[in-house]
Image (cartoon, rainbow, N blue to C red; front, side):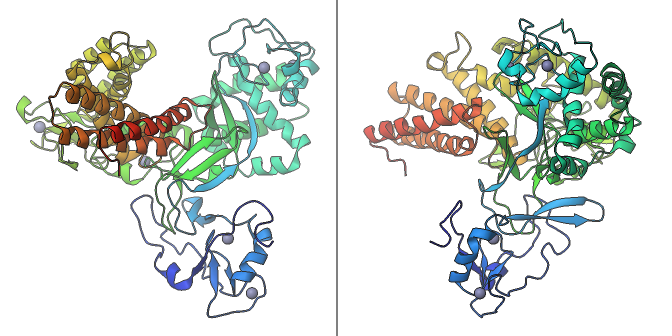
Length: 586
Ligand SMILES: [Zn+2]
Ligand SMILES: [Zn+2]
Ligand SMILES: [Zn+2]
Ligand SMILES: [Zn+2]
Ligand SMILES: [Zn+2]
Ligand SMILES: [Zn+2]
């Protein structure tokens, strides 16, 4: 049967009229292409070359035309291999980027990119070099001395490049420190990538096509460090000096810095180099969502509806970070300045995520709570934001009294408090510690400042899980506190990581719980009438449904994937309960 012989179902056909309704216009979830994204389509049938008034484009890509449904179907077997919702375009300044060739719905698969190579992260604690579980040294590879799980892991193909390089030198390694970062592992992925040159021409060509910024990287501190920890080790310790030249190793280090994706495994984190996905442009409000499947393919989906002509974007830095921190990270590791709509907007899309409270304004003028009135954001008062967020030396100014605030002071103070916050997070803090921290700094930073938001994110999970604060035992005040924290973090997440995002999914679950328990407790003690309880239950239900939708794209091996499965189960219970109470969900 044509069109059904293999793989994906045949997409619908799109008429020219339908297509014209979706022109390449600027849109809110990504920069629209400023140049014509698609060359004028040739409406000649891809199958027979004929033209017809009824010609229809393939609905999967909007890039090829057919004179009839029959010809679309007969061509599908071959076309489906190249049918995708995006294409690579070139811009004189941007370089290569990906642009949507059709309207893409939220959740639609954009690509599943197979890795060029997987390896341990540059900075990692000792892990098995085959399965990447942390190791303790009880088993060592008989040939190279690297700690592994057992002989099976030792013989795995993935481990051979570094194993051969080390054993060839006649000096096996001795790893003695476990459970902390070990510089010996910094060269592993590099050695594996180098080995592709002689072992896999196709992958090697893909690797060499990736951006490395080696020129600019050569003047950085990272280059000086890796000269000792990687280049010298490979050349001298592993005696590869006849095989590779130094510039090639540096180029590969640059490719890793620029392109590697971190992959979270249950017990450790590793990295993967991908060729197609590396063309995803950066934005601090990404319109795509990334996960990894069981084979470590990088799976990219639309996080929000994406219009034809929009660039596809992904975020390559921490989203819950201030503009200064994001810019610095992108500049030092990826060598570019981000000019996304969030970065150029001093208010960061109304979230005021980098804002501090004005030191000059009287206390009653300063907004200390997030100002959301009936879902409508209100501009906070007494907050200082940068005139030009892209300039590190920009003047900061209060939006109410107009007094300037010294940018140097803000940078220094933010760095100090950020360190305090990171230290707090690393100690597995309890509710009291988080609340004390927030209390201490709530007169300095605006409530949505990312330093406070990161702690609030930790805290909203602790209410309901910490011993003595289990959900069923939470006091009404603590339930309200949990709900308020959820709503605040969610309102920022909705703006900066909209649609399908792990951040939204995980907060939505906590929000559902807090509303649900609040409703139950008030309803059972008859504090609220049936009608209000019904309305609240629906609100909890909606949060749960959205949570399940958002997390349904996470792999089950990840905690968020597990949470999504739990949420789906709880939807059923919730429907049953609401039915029993006589409340409909629809
Ligand atoms: Zn035809
Ligand atoms: Zn197609
Ligand atoms: Zn292993
Ligand atoms: Zn070995
Ligand atoms: Zn940005
Ligand atoms: Zn002021």
